[in-house]
Image (cartoon, rainbow, N blue to C red; front, side, top):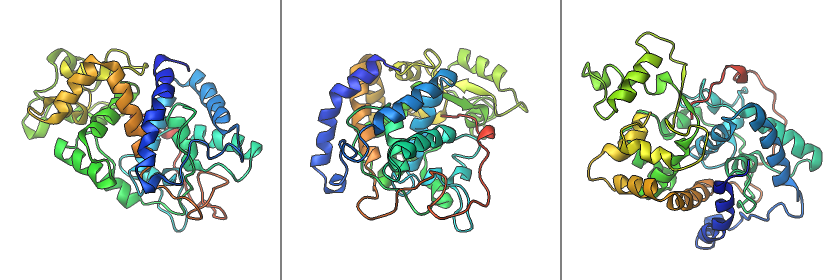
Length: 341
C-alpha cells in the first residue's frame, strides 16, 4: 500500500505533531504510546489492512470514514463500533451510518490480531486512528474506548451529503475544528471511495423543488449520473466519488470541483459558493498536491485528538463491538453495509 502520499505523511508528521505541544488536551496522547506495551501494534494493523486491501480496494476510504464519523460523536472514542445492547443504541444505525458505514469486520480482525499479540492493551479507538492514518508510524496514540454510544448525537453532528456550506462549517466548529482548512482538507478524503445514488440523486432531477437539476453540476456529468441513477431506480447503486482517479489518493478531487464534477452537493458547494474562503482553498489544493497532503495530515491529527478518553476514563475493550462484560441483543449486518464514503 505504499504510495507517494504515505511517504509524504511520514515526513510531514513531525511538524503536525507540534500541534500537540500547544494544547493540554493532547497531553496524554503520544505516537510512542504502545512502544513498551505492544511495540508491534502498528505493523499488526498494517498487515491486516494490506490483506483486506487485496480483496477490497475501497477499504482505506471506508476506514477513514469510520474514524471521521467516530470523532464527530463525543470525540474519538470508538463508539461507532459498538453494537446494540439493552442500554446502547448503536451509532451504526444512525442515519449517516446505516447501510453505508462499512469496514467493521476489518477492524474486528485487527482487534483479534492485537488481542492475540498483546491482550487488553490497544484500544479500538486507536485501532481506528492507525488504520485511518494509513499506518503512519507516528500517529499520536493513547485513546481509550467509550462505555456508551449516542445514535441521537450521530444523527445531528455528522456532516451530511446535502448539508449547506454554513451547516457544514457549524458542524466542524461545534466539535472543535474551527477553520475552513480543516473542512476543505478533510473533504479531500473523498478523493477515493464510492457513494450510493441516494446520497446525491437529489441533485439530478428536482433539486430544491425546482423541477430542474442542480445548476452547479456539469451537464455531461449530469447525463452520466442520470443514467446511472434514474428516477425510481435502485438508490443503492454506487458511483465513484472521484470521477478521474477513484482509487488513488491524490488532489484530483479538487480539480473535479473546479469543473463542476463534484459528486455530492456537500463537495461541490465548497467551490460553488462564490466569495467564500473555501473556493481559494480548493484552487490551492488543486494546483498544489503537496499543500493538500500537508493540510490533510494536520487536519487528520486535529480531528483524531478531539476529546479523547485517556488515563482511567473509559476502558480497553476486548471486542470492539461491545463494552466489556456486555451481551449483544442485536447488531447491524455487515453483509448489508455498502460503502458511501
